[in-house]
Image (tube, rainbow, N blue to C red):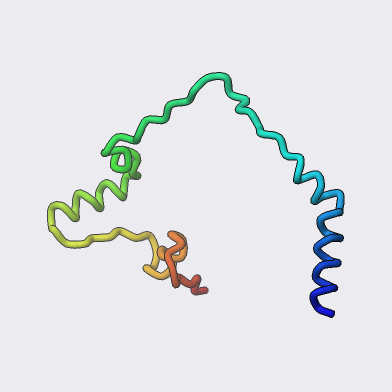
Length: 91
């Protein structure tokens, strides 16, 4: 009985208009007439686009060789804003 029901459902689904329209797919051509070449980012791209406080943090970390972090607010709230895993917003 289960096989008959399965075969009936398979035939019904294959005969639906949506399934038959998917069988007649045509290959899509690219609408851009020219080739686009992507170049890799320079090695110092990240450091060039840092904010003021981030640059100062890096300078402090290089000078002291300690992980120095400047935060405006508590660590938990900053982690929440940075969307770090397991970070919760505390009220």
